[in-house]
Image (tube, rainbow, N blue to C red; front, side, top):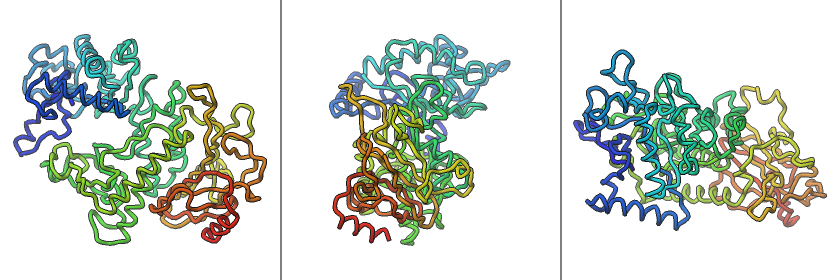
Length: 529
């Protein structure tokens, strides 16, 4: 929302900087987003927006760009910082102070090592918290701010000054943990207090559901909160901001419809934007009337959304992905203030179906604390119980062996989450309990029979069961099946030990519950057969 300018080269070809990543003033909301021409009214409008969102229970996190400004490279306009103190505000090339170090891909990099630039950043951040009442920040290309000499340093002055600040140390701090310079990729390396856009989560989930080999172990880490990245330094699963798509890249619909970028509308002969997208078009590039391809694409979108919302960590949904929004294959739509980027709210029946499915996923996540644990899994019995909090399963229903994780073609697995092992208490000091959940995933294109586990002593609402699931006292209730978007909670009950027909490219989620009726079980058994 910071005031920004359109890039000269975009104006010359009739485009504009739609995303606004070209800041000229770190203290002003951009006038184009206001209904008023008055600066004071624009500030009041912003404050009222934040107040209204807070009243609705919604926090406000600003996407902020302190890594560069709109003044560009040595050929760019002199607007403010360059003319005031070029050496203080910008990183310059050693021995050639006419030119700028460009870790951002925009022509310049703000000199966050200099006290004056640090003060500018801190004053701006405090202004948006204390005056505008926002709840936190997502820092664009945050690695560029943490570079001391040339390398990104987690002990840099930028981190130190934020961590010691009594205001900013209390708000949400989210890093885009990379920049475009050498050695700038730092997923997992930001210090305590920081959450991160987890780029490894994005790549692992895309690769797994595309059908790439040797992704089983990687997807297991990402589904369970990325403990390999965030546990050793004292952070929690919510340090991982999980995402599959963002504003920068393909939308979800395009991720399953295009294997090549189509950025011709940007006026750069399709040279801009990322080339490696880990995408799959299911046999045809772009839109098609083939019903089989469209059905596969719709299923893949549901499966990706289910993976995101059933993973530990914080899910981030790219605006419009819940509606199947397309950018026509453009994976760098920063300059497209038109139908390519806009959301069309006139939904088709297929888009309505995807929106309903996404809403069900969000409701499930809200209702089950096992899906949003504040602590990492231990993979061992908790507090004297003989029940482990997490168990990985093979399609035959048995626990996965160490050797199976290394099998290159392993694309089907399950994870059992014991609901009575969260090891946390609520605001009244009472233990937080949940149902035992089973999530199974099949990244093969064909159906795989998956044996629903029968585990003596498995937990149900935190109590050790005295009944063996095989005797019909407990059963698995199907909550989500991404191959069947119309399925409703509780529609189907399965007896443990039976095989579930897990369709290709599908996620299914079950809840362990008391058996309802023998007749219902028999009906379910017939369907599973």
